[in-house]
Length: 163
Image 1: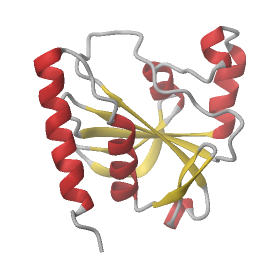
Image 2: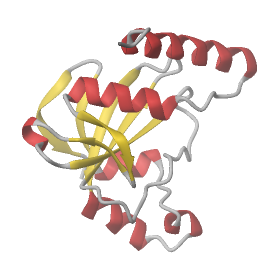
Image 3: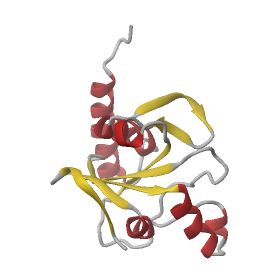
Image 4: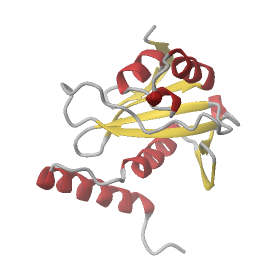
């Protein structure tokens, strides 16, 4: 039996990370774990406790059986351009990438998803060293991805595309 409730730990982690960022101007490296928790909770995914190469969760419902890589990014300043998400594991056995965008308090405000084919197409069309390492900008992910959840609207009834 766990000594602490996971939801309470994540809530406290959010609070501490936000306070640390405000006090120091630096980020604590916790956004990935918060994003994993949030995306799984909001979209009803099963977290993969045995970490596999590039697979953080397994889909349920509409995403039944799909292997999902989860990324998170704190957007504290909407005006700042060129923000990137963490490296996407190109070689992993995943089907979708989910991106959780969080505000300065580490609270999610949007979740996007993109298929393996969409992600690899973008990474292959750009021949930079960043793309070869699996790096993609938040702006580009928003363009190719579909918004599946937002703080204002909750789960999107119909997944829509920015294309």
